[in-house]
Amino acid sequence: MIQIVRLSILMIFLPVAMLAQNRNENGAIRGQVTTSDGQPAMNVTVLLLQTGKGAYTNEKGEYLIRGVKPGSYQLKVTSVEVGGQQQAVSVTGGQTTTVNLILTASAAQLQEVTVTGRNHDKVNAIVAKIPLTNLENPQVYNSVPAELMKQQGVTNYDDALRNVPGITRTWESTGRAGDGATYFALRGFDAQAFLTNGLPGLVSGNLDPANVEEIQVLKGPSGTLFGGSFFSYGGIINTITKKAYFGYGGEIGYNAGSFGLNRVTADVNTMLSKKEKIALRVNAAYHSENSWQDAGFKKSLFFAPSLNYEVNDKLSFQVLTEILQEERR
Image 1 (cartoon, rainbow, N blue to C red):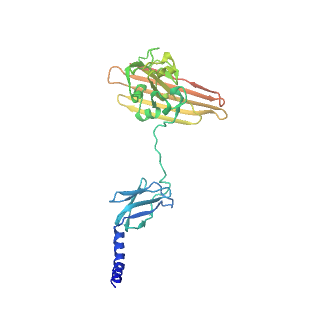
Image 2 (cartoon, rainbow, N blue to C red):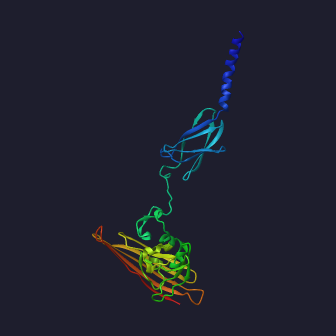
């Protein structure tokens, strides 16, 4: 009789104990996030507010949040395009709650955007004299591309080299024949812009940035790769000019500044033959500026045509010319 009574009491309180235990257990939330056009939303953040818990959706748009205490919460879905969407959810202990969400954005709006800097795997055969990627190149060099000079509004060659660390201008160009361009201090030695497209190119005065595609500064004795007569123990400065390409394009720019600075630039590229690969590119610039001193006035006219003729896959010709007329006082 006593055993029957004990068994009856156990059967009465066992469901109550199990229910209390389930209430104390944590639950989970799972579901799928889709876009407005029915496509799975991948890499979308699903957050359970006031808990610090969350998850990312997989390739199928599915997510799973474990270890949630029983109760009522706000489920928030965030992404770049839709901002934040919230939905109420109740979690029961020991159970998995399914909540499917639909975003207001379409799949096209949620496409992945990749932001990259400079391409470190790009092969540059000009700097190393051999086809090496930037990561494989042991030489110490810096480059200033035309895009950067355009963003900074650079109007002269010397200002472009401010982007290169460890180089300082010591003497401005005099414009005298054979004197070359500006002198720079590079690792304690004098350096000038002696090289053009990897070849010796002495100039009488500064170069005009209108025809500059990239400026490469090679530091240290690695400059001997370009010849002993045109390098400094501190390094070399190599100027890559703009070249004609097979296509059509053009650009016109205007810069204005204090002390009467006015600069007009033009860049035009065209095909000269439809049957043969012959292209012509012309870069031109007119520059005029005054100064707050008695000296420093400048007026120049620059013209740089380039011709590219590709005979076949193994033979091509490139003709590059720069004409600069400049007056200073």
